[in-house]
Image 1 (spheres, helix red, strand yellow):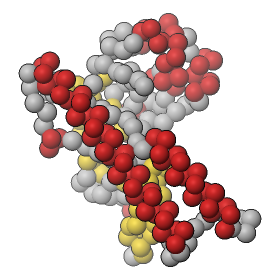
Image 2 (cartoon, one colour; image 1 turned 30 degrees about the vertical axis):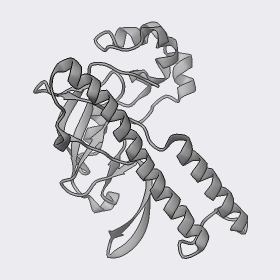
Image 3 (cartoon, helix red, strand yellow; image 1 turned 120 degrees about the horizontal axis):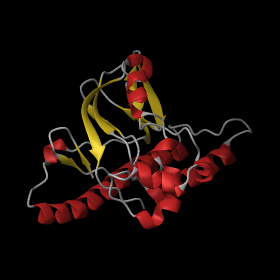
Image 4 (cartoon, one colour; image 1 turned 180 degrees about the vertical axis):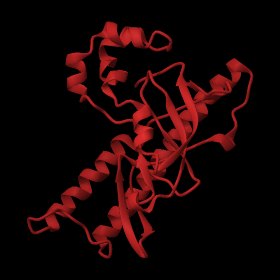
Amino acid sequence: MDRDADGALWLLLHTGSRGVGAAIADHHGRVARALGEGGLPALDIHTAEGAACLADTQWACRFALANREAIAARALDVLEEALGVAADPASAVDVHHNHVALEEHGGRMLWVHRKGAVGLQAGQRGLIPGSMGTASYVVEGRGEPRAFRSCSHGAGRVLTRAEARARIRPAALEHVLRRVVYDKGRAAALVEEAPAAYRDITEVLEDEADLVRPLLRLTPLAVLKG
């Protein structure tokens, strides 16, 4: 749960197709390797195998969206009852950050695979999250063609999960999250998600100034990590 400068509350969710998506990727990876000749595994979209891969990938994106919508609906019901206010559906922002899409770039139709990246048309809203203890931003795409009209999915890590567990003490996490509501009993397990494990979100936005324009700065109030 985050808050913007005007005091409006924002519910942020980060989840996708989870195990279903991983199973789809594993299956079609095996198919591609079996059909290949020892090079980089690939599937021709004009074959039955390639068409099946695309169909399953698109289904996984729909599953991921339905997953987020189901979680949001249950969370918003609780929040609306507790706070006595209704959510604004028009303010919703939803983006995929691991998917493939057929797009026009440079006068050609291309299959674009984004991994840890978000596709944003000029004027389209997106979200670049920071970490559980730092700001996140609602942004607007600039439609930069050199970046295939894309931006980063988030701040990005500077420490792997293993490095974060080795270097960051639970006490340090508790200090930096002293103004955020979270499960303090899980501090030792949550150090891998500590703000220090991620890049500075301000620097990230500066680096992406040609790609997006910040619209809203969201400050974390409460965090629930699964």
